Image (cartoon, rainbow, N blue to C red; front, side, top):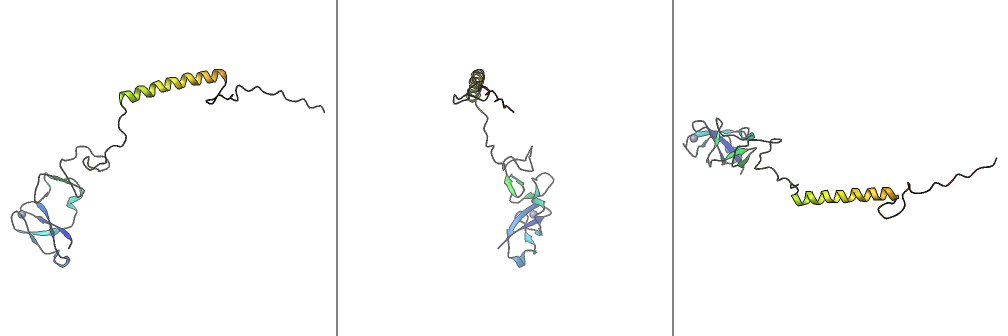
Length: 142
Ligand SMILES: [Zn+2]
């Protein structure tokens, strides 16, 4: 049986009930005041809500964001993603040691490059184009 949402006006609350499809539009008693609440379409659950908006019954002090339960209201959001539901950042910040290693490596690489440039050799020790002597062009006798 599908899950439907109902709204209780005196409590200003939304609650869910599992009903049969043909009974879905019938009113369902509110779990708090037991008055009949009318069925709603899931438009209320679009964003995080609490103050001034319908709350969820039973109320556990949690918030709702895009139909998912969250502990806190979002202060900052990126692309409507709640921080509690967002994926953790995959690239951790490099440590001080990592930064120092990278810097030392760059220094060594730069000095190697200068050396190779001076002597006209590549990383494997072969002569680069720069170091190769140009063959004198043959004179063509006409
Ligand atoms: Zn109620």
